Amino acid sequence: MRQLPETDRDAIRIAKDPQFARWLEQITATGGCAHPIHLTGSTTTLDSATGEILHHYDTRNEPGERLLVRCRNRRATVCPACSHLHAGDTFHLVRAGLLGGKNVPAAVRYRPRLFVTLTAPSFGPVHRATDVCRPRRDGGTCEHGRPLGCGAAHTSDAPIVGQPLCPDCYDYTGHVLWHAHASKLWDRFVIDVRRCLASSAGLVQSRFAQHARLSFARVAEYQKRAAVHVHAIVRLDGPTGPDEDPPAWGTTELLARAVHASAGRVLVHTRYSPAIGERALGWGAQVDARPLRADGDGPADDAVAAYVAKYVTKGASDTGAGLDHKVTSCAGIETAPVNAHVRSLMRACWRLGGLPEYGQLNLRTWTHTLGYRGHILTKSRAYSTTYAALRTERATHMGHTDLPDTATERNWRYAGSGHTPGAALIAAGVADDLAAAREAAHSAVSSIRGDALGAG
Image 1 (cartoon, rainbow, N blue to C red):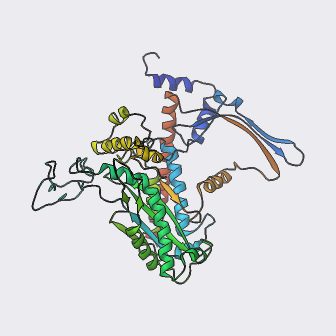
Image 2 (cartoon, helix red, strand yellow):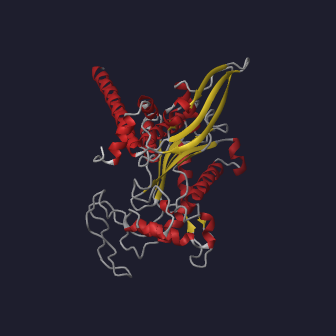
Image 3 (tube, rainbow, N blue to C red):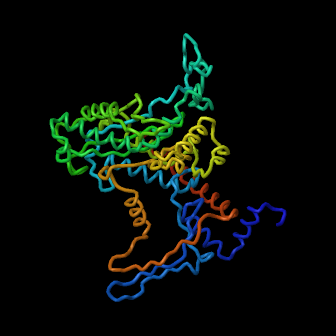
């Protein structure tokens, strides 16, 4: 035993425990969560009328006197099991706003809807994945002596793609400040779209809410150049939301014009800095607004929902645009497993975070995400359901909700998190088995559907 690695010795110790079967049940119930939360305590269910105890659960009889629950981390790099569940919830959340369901009427699929992409502006030329990266007939070099063009062919997975042609010319300060203000820029954009729609309809802007409502769900994604861009589903409803049709003037074409106009003119100004000055930050020139039509002429609703759900589970390290954990010192930046471009952005974050005029941006806290401090997914209240409602629905389906005419007393406290090395190995095996079972079930369903279509 002593010659075995520590992980194997720990796994054998766990397997020999008399309560191993119950521990394995807990791990399976969490889906093989990589970093489960440990809880101790009890739950007692009482008859509301008589006070009779109907059911009592206590962790004193559990392995280690603890109950393991999911960590619910959305990042696949942190917990593949929980990120899969989060992606599924995101798919249904986004899909409900496109096709209805989850207490959203099916009529929303006939509303004016757009799939919008907004990009960051240019902070300097970067290498691109094309047959000819950046052709330039007259050649030439920048003030630092580096070529202004690149005639090489780059594949999409080439390490050089997204890297600046000249790091010394690249506007790292502007890049970081744009990330720090991206969420505010989105808020300004949504407000301006409403104003533009009101003006086009001949309404006083303050009266727009009495005639229509703008709903959205948007996800942030890092590009190869480590700049965030935004994908959003934008929908126009009546004043009460998804339960009411928009007015006759609310068309898809009008909504698209408003999106393009607002994207081209909204700005956010940074605070004045003696070292930096004042910056006016806006969206990039590349703006896309594709109609989502119920007749299938355009991107498929399910495909759009799946696309958004896929990016929600990606962390910064997944895309090579930062880290999934915070950086606490300059030394942490220098040892981070990132490329030179991202490291320069992290250095700029740390440097700007030390300026008092940018104190409210908390740039040093968000150095690991290159200054971006917004949520990966945000939505308006009336767009569709919520994550909490989806979790409640799942709990009801599993029979984990309170019974009628009963009262429940809960007494729980946090007792730790994570796995020992051997437990982590077993949990990873459980997660792999569950993923393989899902894949097999998916393949079987696809095969049955294919056979049915072929017979038809």
